Length: 382
Image 1 (cartoon, one colour):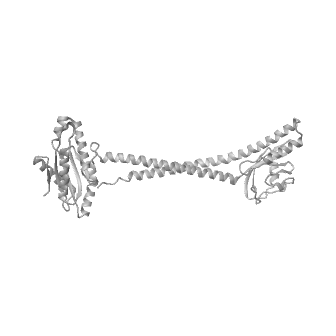
Image 2: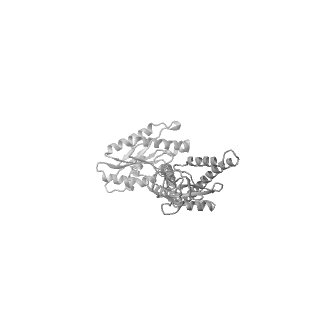
Image 3: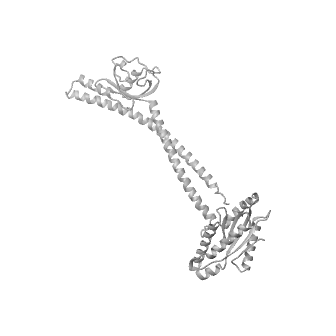
């Protein structure tokens, strides 16, 4: 029987993961708020830049007319064709009116072309093109309004356009961005960013769990495993003894047995061969005990050359067979420096209502009796 790994580290790791996730989301929220403002401003500047590009195209054709390469009428026709053909993003376009409010080109609403648009209003009743002309004559700028998307007739979508005036021909040139498209682009970036954060958090959490488990296992082994023999420590025995008592009380078909083992004349080994050889002996004995016992048994290095085994078994005969098998295996084993060992073993079985300290003391007493009998033997309760 073994005690389970404490869940305290697991709880602390869970709290750390939650705090990390909340912190990441909070930082992302602050970042995204700042990004949203910057993103909107960038889109505004993009609209202004596109209008400036259209202005430059018109100016290019105007200069060709000044150079005499083409006449003014041809230059205007070519400039209008270039602007009408220009498309960007999904539904971006340019439109042109003259300064009097006469629509020259409008790619998505051709029915407005060659008409007076001074009376055309947006979805909220704003005299839209008058506002465009006023803004362009004033030096250019943005106008926000409600308009229809390409292919639609209802004026329901918020839009922001930048307008500028090309003075030589008296043209007002404009283009804009649909604010719902801006919001959609921002939402796509938001969703992708959240997805990236969750993936990054997932993998960092997995890595943290892996590291925590590896560290926990190492820390636990340091706390409960003897570094020399790899058997359990006396401290671990103190933590698990109640579990064995509980199982003994619950299972009426088996009984708790405690085996107390001691290496005979171990001090002479250290004195004659040195502590390194003594350590090799202890390490070898630990391997033998683990090999000869069951996974559910508990093998403990109790201190120095003393060892304790806790086991739940059904009969004294099986326990005696176990003890004898261990004794004979150790005796037959050739340790370093080519010498043999012997063990003295004391065994006690738990009596009803007996606590663990009492059982252990009786096993220790039986070990003492085994040594008095000449060592290399087993003494068990009658």
